[in-house]
Image (cartoon, rainbow, N blue to C red; front, side, top):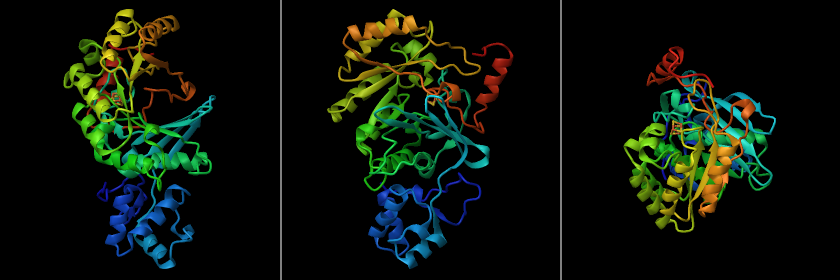
Length: 384
Ligand code: SF4
């Protein structure tokens, strides 16, 4: 996939007349090297330095000729987003606040587990889809991230975790589940994901790179034709009325259309399954009737699985976490019906890094933040 040289504005001090090499996947970088009069294989040499050795200084790329190093130094740079803040929770979860242009910032989260380490990456500054139970959804939207700003989150985390590909791989999985709807930033996100997959990039297998969508039906089909990655769908309700309340996109692409798109995905990729994310909110979607609706939905996608996520409250939300008994009862109903179901353990609570809590800093162009604050002040919604 060839990507245009996107103007990357993460770092206001970044040279405007230089090209950020993190904006290119392998093919794009080979094309760029051809454009500057170099052999394409040189691009692959440089890629290895950038992603395997996490090197951003051309001078240190010792097997690259001196003249080429000088040329790259004069016209290019390796520019990940700037780290504004790094927090580490008591359970080992890391959260980075990464600065973009004009005071915007996004968050990336690393969750270590005994057998794997998962990095949650953002795709947009804010999100236009306004899911009512999501912190990012209350913040409005500013813009899409450039490829360098998406893969740059992984580059920063890898560097700070000491993740050296093929030696000490601490990031074993990536989920595009941070701020934003990744399928609304399709080209930039798929360019970044191809770098996550590429052997000269971070070299992760397709089942270890997951894109999570709220259900943008036409783009699910496009994704399956474009790149080999795994899919997760933010479901949260299996009846249209409730799902539209929680995920307003459902009005445009109701459950019947979403189901059909997921069935097409599974038909094209018979060895893969889709994970359906279901956030459990007290008295909203955690009752036995909701479990039965979910079982009925999953019967149409028998090879897929459900990931139950206890809701993580954030200031101003009207929702509460389901109590342990309700969660257990809900999971039991699903398991007894033969639905492969996992319960996600909440991680990073003490640094607001849990699922649905990412908020970064968004210069809101949709005025949604102001409306949310007004409703909060008027008492229409209450603090968690
Ligand atoms: S859940 Fe995802 S799609 Fe919905 S508002 Fe939050 S970030 Fe956007």
